Image 1 (tube, helix red, strand yellow):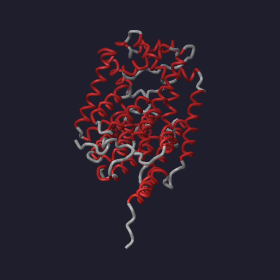
Image 2 (cartoon, one colour):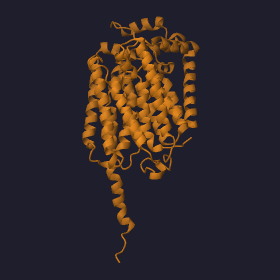
Image 3 (cartoon, helix red, strand yellow):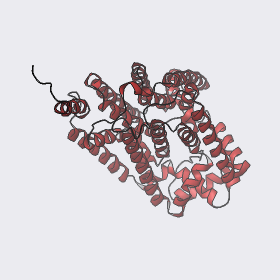
Image 4 (tube, helix red, strand yellow):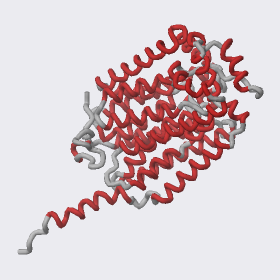
Length: 444
């Protein structure tokens, strides 16, 4: 009788078979090519930003943040949203340039974060602020890649996924305009990391704070996800984070400042053209032109999208293997449901792209094609944004970005629903399971 093959002789073969799908699925780009492409795109973004003239700097969105933070720093917290104060200060800040006035409409917490930059000249502050936002987006991509299921993936593949995610158009627009979306990207990455670690209350608290620090309108779909998930700790954490941020609003600006903020936001509804927005209201703005009907139809679409977000949350309950696709779908849905969203707001999706690409890189060969599909959706969205900017979303193409986001959301939802198993049945992920911390998300 032949002697049995020792287990130790087969062990290396088993490990190699498990590692191979994550290292080199035949359908994936080679790591050096992906890294080179990501670096070239980022270099192009930085060069475009570096060429901004003083006129472009004065017209950048950061200027209104500079104005709002300056009013807060100089003791005008209660009236910082008053056009009577904002308009003349804005014109003095950009002088001798002659530009229109862009009002400051972000939350008081956002103005407080920008105060240190107001100690510098506008042009230097703009450069430092944009670099800060770029670093926050890069940190978000790194955290997302590190936290994602990454069994047997090498550093080159992880770096490639992070760089490809950073190449999204939201990174370029946030950098050039000096926008706030690095805060959203970092917050969403931390939420994902803590969900992976089963720290549901902490994840909810971070999501509640992230939602209200600067751009509350971007949180609708994610809020619906939390409600649909029906996890008590996640929900209470979210409520706690939101209430904490509101208390910070009051501490920073007082009742008068918070009232002014709410009034300014309400007053601004209908001022902006919906046809150039990247959310669902951009589609309605093209269909019925920039009329009140566009906002009404957009609101109806937002409610429908929030229902989809809640359904995704329900699908995540008790099924931790669906986390990556489900949370990515909710992030895209949240952007689509926003009543006010522009190309720079796609930066909030950078961590979602990073963790999705990483998780799909570590999947079995049968799922390797999904990595290519996810990357294609990400690239298509970036190209749609650039086309919208080049054509100003005018006919015959109209606005393309919302359609590409709808396709991306559909892909993420489909992948989520295909993930029927639970993590306990397939065993822990040796790359991310630390003492069993990420084995399963609680059902309630």
